[in-house]
Every structure is written in C-alpha cells, then in structure tokens.
Image 1 (cartoon, rainbow, N blue to C red):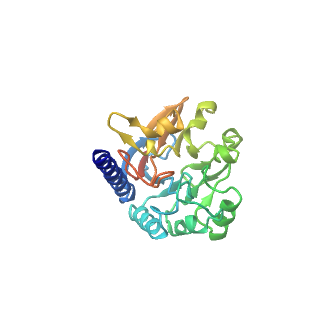
Image 2 (cartoon, one colour):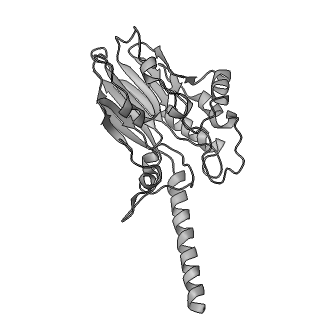
Image 3 (cartoon, rainbow, N blue to C red):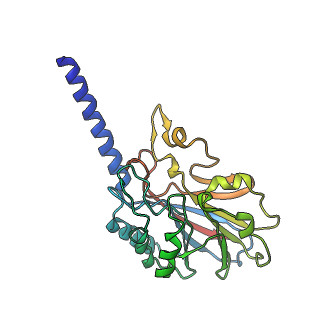
Length: 273
C-alpha cells in the first residue's frame, strides 16, 4: 500500500509539473515570427508589413483582458501597415463552465489596434455569429469581414467566414475589382482544399485554427493531430490545393490552457512585388 501511495504521489507531482510548465509556455509573451513573401502585382519597390494573429480565446485562466491589452500593445509596437485577425477570440476552455455568448471582453481590446491600411478580422468557429458582428460594429475597429472584401489601396483584403458560420470563399472572390493582389483571411485553412483558386488572381491567404497542434511532445508527436485529425497545413507557409497560405499557431489555447513545442506567436509578413 505504501509503495502504491508513493506511486500515486509521484504521478500527481509529475502531472502538476507538466501542467505548470505547459501553462507557463502558454502565457509567455508571443514570439514574433517574421517572413518575407513575394506577392505579384504590388507597386514596384513597395514593402508592406502585415501583422497577423489568431486564436486569442479570451477566458479563464490564461487569457485575461490585461493580457489581451498587452498583446495589442505588442502588435502596435511592430508598426505594421496592415493588421489581420484570423478568428477565435472567444472561449473554448474546459474551465469555461458557463461561457457567455456576449463577446465584448474578448473583442474590446482590439479597438486600440492601429495600422494605416486598416485592421480587419474574420470570425472563428468559437465566436458567436450573432454577437460578434454586433460588437465589432459597435466599436468600429477592427472591421469584421463576413464573406466580404475591401480595397485598401495597394491591395484588396478579403475575409471569409468560418465554416461553422457559413463560409463562401467563391462568392467573396467573385466579380470585378480584383485586378490588385488579394490578401484572404479565413479561420480554417483547410477550407481551401475544397475550393478552386480563381485563375489569374494574385493572392495570399492567412489562417489560424490549428494552434500548430498546441501540444507537441517527444515520442508522442502532435497531440492536436490526434484530437482534431489531419490538417493540410498546421503552421507556417504552405500551399493548399494551389493556394499559397501562411497558417499561424495563434496566441491562446482551447480545451487545456497549456502549450508545448508551439509557443504563442504573432506573424509579421513583409510583402514585396
């Protein structure tokens, strides 16, 4: 009995260490992951800096309003020309026993984001499709794109809804006005596996959703893959069905508030012709 009790105590201590280190990993300031990406069709000599982040998942215990405001300050300090948010600002944790569908605390800090070409967002599968448009419209910034696109000067920003809320990529990219290069924001990059890329369109897509797996362990591998199934692109620059895309591993967490092998991140993409 004494040996068994010691074994349980050792296992409990190991579990606490595992959760504690994972929580520390998850709550560190996001790293900045920089890429330089060519995008045909941009004005000669231009360099457009685009900050991208996703999956903040506001809620107890790892994503407070104070932490969100710190992330906003970190993004603003990068002085990007354009800021894109790729969904899942709300909930998704086992400890959210009674999450509110109202999204004000999850979204309000983003009103302080500043970029000369604008700040744009799309919804993720965890975001409430009734309240998100109301809250974003009320505060004015960021501009929520629901299967919409806008001309922002040197390029066009298009935003496709989450699969959970009725994505329409084909409709978003249909019609005239796409002579300029296009940045497409969507939450689930795997949507592109089932979409034909419009011919002649200069486009680069950004997505979140995967958290990069969130937990990658030695001898175990990508835990997210074991829970969510396969993904065409877990993290970084990829090509999905002919679409160039960069997937961010996001900032927050869902289910368990821990990360291993996949730190919180902000993308900083420099676009060149």
